[in-house]
Image 1: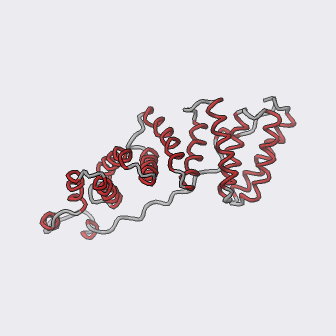
Image 2: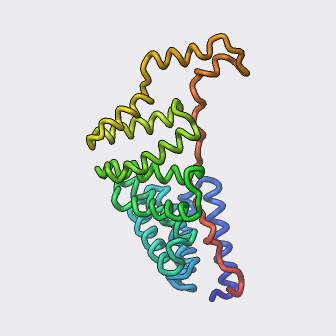
Image 3: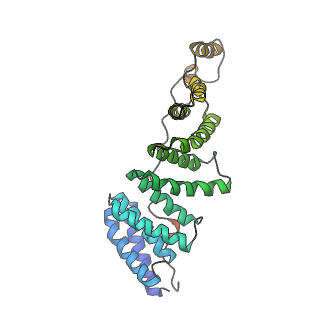
Length: 258
């Protein structure tokens, strides 16, 4: 248990480190996070929730600065501790699992990142947050890419089919994202010798000229709402996604008398 004075010291260090993160100065935040983790670990113990959160946050800063080796060690330490203390489905455990999976993916360690992505995916499945959840599709796509890079085309197929189903339902057959998934699925199907399914999907990607002509004719002479050119205009650019945040929710220092 931290004394009131120790709790205030933890809070001050945390606020100073967070201020450097907000000002995009992780190199200035790094020594403060090291100091904070050392102090919390000494006072609360290496398996305390706040200590494990501190390992995760320090690893995030190290990862952002390109210190991959030390970041990996701390992510593993945090993840294994959270599995023991909090359980596999705790949100803090899942956050660190995802952070470690992203690092493994970046390194090209496909076999190591896949089960960590699948751990997050399984929780979304349990909650019923599937194809309508953007994070669910993102995880599916990361798993597919890792499986394909690992040479495991058979395991990638059900994920690809599910992604394609969701893209067709939400975006339509002619959306660039949908067509990209179609091409990837066709390539995998041909590699494993499933030419009949590959041919049927390829017709959606490259419809016969008569089909294209009929689509164009179907719009001729119609009065459309909005500019006519909008039908065939290119799609807007994809939204810009900010990188994952530095601080996880469970990392707040203990209150006085903790």
